[in-house]
Image (cartoon, rainbow, N blue to C red; front, side):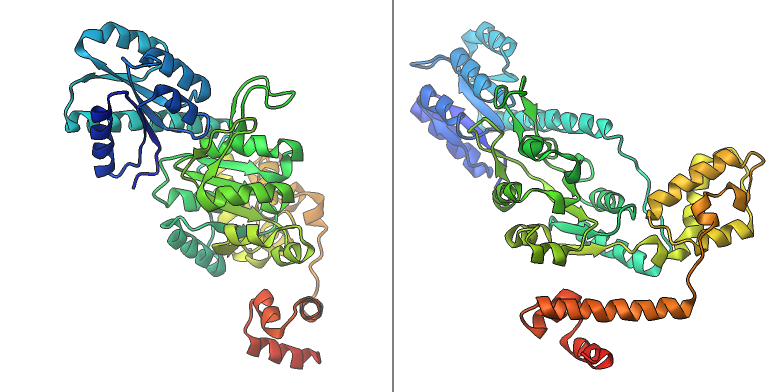
Length: 442
């Protein structure tokens, strides 16, 4: 069954039924109306991707019907149906916004061919709109650089997940590459030729959130001076990336639930129901379990976005990636230069903790290429925080990790109603939890 919505208006009942049967036999589920007024009113309630409208009708003719549909739904692709003697009227209809026309009588094959052409035109218009938005976001095409075993396993899982439409939640500190991983999933999916639309949920004022996602119509609120297409429309057929998803206001989480259930929504200030086909990938740099417990994230919303969880390790836990990242960024920003990094400089880079992760590392490479005038990078070319960084002794570090783990288990045990739930939150088996409690005297 096709997910696209199609409307047919023709006051000749026999022709209407013939068209309806032809569309149903090819997997469509059309809305058909013999009264053009009823058909026009339906466009106030539901968004149709494509509409077929007869030219000669009562009580409204096809041109008037076309104009009214375009008022209600400017994005609907309209095809006029007309007899041989009315070609001039069909040309007039195209000037008023019709995409094409088909002359009666027509065969099933001819009609279904024009249906396919209309949907292809509709898809290309939406795709072009999405690609324009992609250019505004200046999306990059870098691959995810890693030699680290744990991170490579994350990529393998991401590639497997890409083949389905299951929602994905990516977790990781700021700067670890969550959006890059989301793009990796998109480009390895069947949606790769359609838009990848990213939205930073923490950067949108709460009162504009609904408009940003769903779009709005002119006059919906004080500053709505013209119609605006939302990110969901732009992402149709592709992927919508919700970065920092935990910052979505709870009221908006409720409104998103309906969309996540059936992919339907209304623009702000409009009662027309629209349907899109979008794959959702979310990301957060926060502790999801803590946000659930605190009520920051609604449970029903969480379970809609967390089909698969992927966790990107911070750079301090994958120091074996530093050499590969260094080569990649030097080649990217130091093209045509023969840059040498001294061993002393490399050691400082390996010792540093990188709180800003790969994003901080990339910025650092840009800096050293500016200061290394003779193409040899020395410690003095590094930022002060890297030069003065003192790694903690191994024994102290191990002790601190043990203390943190013990305290974390205590906190989870206080929060969880049962041991089974505590082990689920910690991501370990009940047996492992029992052993750790025994080890830490809990």
